[in-house]
Length: 627
Ligand code: ADP
Ligand code: MG
Image 1: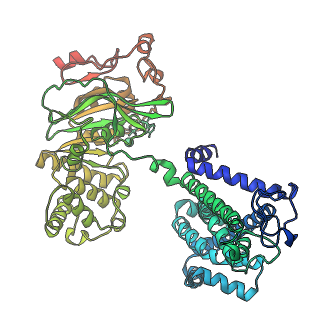
Image 2: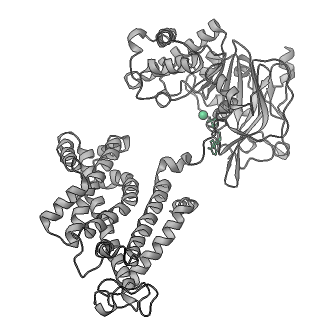
């Protein structure tokens, strides 16, 4: 609730709308207590008195009635009728929409066709017809306005309900033995409530206008009772001679409807979860950069990440997700990055191409050199030309990265045509070739499949095919096999291995699985709390881990054929990256930790191919390199 109000208050116009509206509503509420003239008492001797005259602040109308009093009483009535109509329409419409969407099938068909029939009439005509049938009167006008707005709510809410009626949490509720009524009340309703409120906040002003319209035509409130529409209708005859009689009620309608709409827009923006998650803040195409000095280039590696630092600045907190990471890859090499969940692997990978979302992400230091050129802070055009063309990504969840409404062929064609001018037919041939190269059987026909028609393993292959679309030099794979079962995982790994041998691809492979690293990677970097704690050739690290963390991480992995042994989970949790300790981040969980570990920062030190960030490594690196 607090968050909602802050968001709402950030929208200046909505805030003003809310404040003015609150004033009007307050006035309407206290109208009976105010020392006003009787609104319906006529006094023809004092017709058409001008505003600001003695005893009548806003003047009088054609029957000499006090306009201020009529205005306030009329506002009270109009607000009440508009609000009541909105409540009725929202409740009825939502109930209809939820039932249609939840039960689906024939129920849905019957209800929605009925709603369609209502929607087929121009709604003002429909409202007029309803009032004509029921007879003029404010209550009937209210019914008419509510009735013509029911279909709008019903359609909106049905759509939302359909999309959540088959979500897993609803299935789970059903499995738990909940009745349909309970599911609707406790599982569906809370999820559609924001949509109902949003729809209401944006239509309530409209309903006040419609009620006023019916009253204006003489079908709503009946004389002598005043509402804003009937006041306007009665003043119409004197529009030219005594315009103040029309202006008073007209201005009030304008103010009310405008305030409600401004406030409604604000409410919608603040409530809509998609907008709340940051869609309203302007998206930046590349991660923001704020770094002081750039490390000098050393060597001409294909990709050289130098002391990369990426942080998330959320309010007054700073999350040091990546705190100075060095990596290099050469063509044909596979570098593994391994570490517990939350150790900064993904953020490191995304920082390479400036893909970390900003805000809140900021690259605060280091360099990412691609063939010697620094990519951090490079113009967006440079990054764009490299992304997907020279450096491609494969992500964990292929279903989330593939567009559900396009065939995989179309998506591959698009991936090719973003970077190369080729004819569609040629791109299609290329798509089939790509699918074949990732060993999708029957590529000719699979190219026209939609993502949901493929199995998880096949979708991941499509993901890899997409990454390969433009013959990249580097593939960054972020846990590409974590969601797959072991046999499919083995196939994907051997596919990647072949690709790098055949095409000389450089692969950065992120995982938390030592088995996968052993199978695929030449070198491996172990990450902990945003830093590399050990790096070296896979063989050497697997046989003799030097950092206590690496050793403990490996002890957590069950080994086949080794008999029963105790798996040792690492006690404790990784430190939160917004409160990193001064010395070694692993000290809290390390059995060997001592005073010096916590005192000051520990450098990544080593000889030859291996390096470790520990003052007391499990194996002395120097001796090993000599041997
Ligand atoms: P993993 O190694 O599992 O891929 P990540 O790289 O995704 O881990 O995350 C590294 C750290 O960055 C985590 O501690 C996470 O809490 C933090 N982090 C990631 N995204 C955000 C964000 N948008 N705001 C704040 N912190 C974030
Ligand atoms: Mg990750």
